[in-house]
Length: 201
Image 1 (cartoon, rainbow, N blue to C red):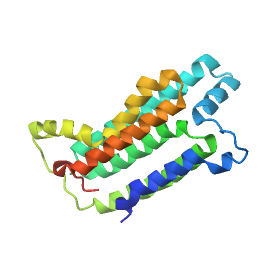
Image 2: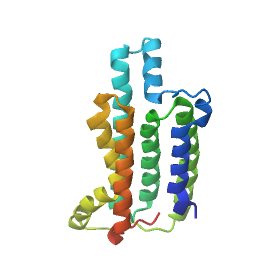
Image 3: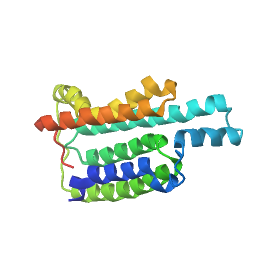
Image 4: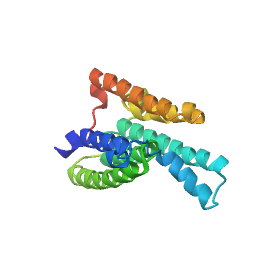
């Protein structure tokens, strides 16, 4: 049951994180975690302000691509025991990457709740996959699955590419729009119901 609602649960957590009503009581936009972390790096003289913003976004890009890679790998090898745990780890890393667009308080809450949810989901996956076998599959058959797996995880790839292409504009609205477009594409793909890539978790 928990696995079936996990995306809705994490989506709700993310919406609250982006909204962060407790940080908007004065009516002004509270700023983003991206700028907050960049300012903290500069304030503590770890990096100059000219480079700190790029460093924060660079870390987010790495997390976003790592999340997409893990999710895609899990979609390809969806019948292996470790696939379920890998999918949840990828989702958690994606939340970390996404949190830089949120206000600092919302990002903190989102990461904390996502960490708890990921721990519960991975533990549940470990228990449920105990009886799952690791079937031997031909290289040709596995290779044919990669394009479909990338399509299945199009949301994660879309967010990662959005960061790479538009981060240099330092425009929060454009980045948020890229996330929304990626989500819309994922909904369309999900509606296609790719039976060969349905996972066991």
